[in-house]
Length: 171
Ligand code: CA
Ligand code: CA
Image 1 (cartoon, rainbow, N blue to C red):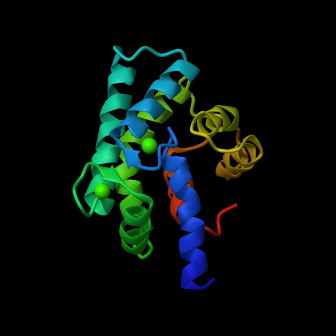
Image 2 (image 1 turned 90 degrees about the vertical axis):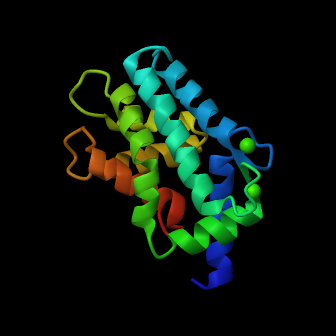
Image 3 (image 1 turned 180 degrees about the vertical axis):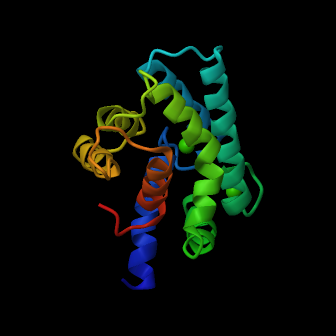
């Protein structure tokens, strides 16, 4: 894959972060995603898990801004996303997992409804709430259960999440 094609595919990931579709990634996209996830799993914002999710969403936003908000206006434009996020994360996808980890850890705590791990179905619900097309959500969630035991481990979720958002080759 050449560089131009890579950037074009990464640009399509921009829409996944721009949850409200206003053309910028900003704090509201992350807090909005947290609110939608709480509603999906019938969790209140005031409980410990709800607080952890909002904290994680804010940390995720701060990490994203630190990497990509080059002009410091508290929002990441499409061009900033491509030049900042893509160029810095291409060689270090684990950096992406690091900034996303507190958020994903909190999402897992909410999506693990019986305390025995996240099921592929719960992961599919998370992805759909975040705007992933239903067919792709089912495919990605199913692929995360690498040992097919019906539960998805945190490491697999982190790796899958990073792969989905920064590796265009991922399904
Ligand atoms: Ca937005
Ligand atoms: Ca900016």
